[in-house]
Length: 78
Image 1: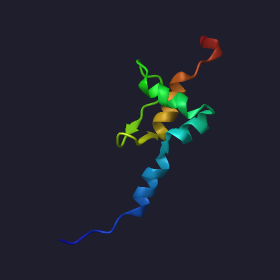
Image 2: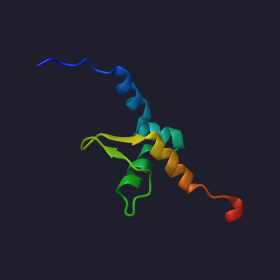
Image 3: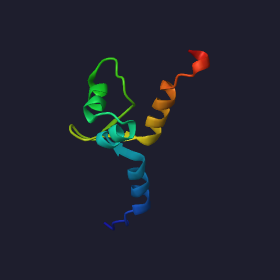
Image 4: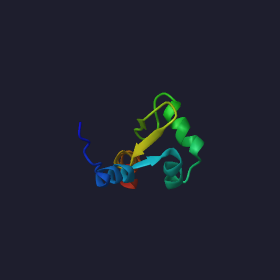
């Protein structure tokens, strides 16, 4: 069986679009425990997440952007 070379550009593109809980917390200027809590409360409160394993959670930056946009409150609409 012949192995194909790994497309490192594709891997880097995916990695650059995924962020960790800690990175998301820094981006939102909240404690990482807040982000973790958002994943466990019902109904869910935070952005969609990707559970790669029992201990590895990642967030797609586009999901985060959409979630942030959905949380925007416009003064004229309030």
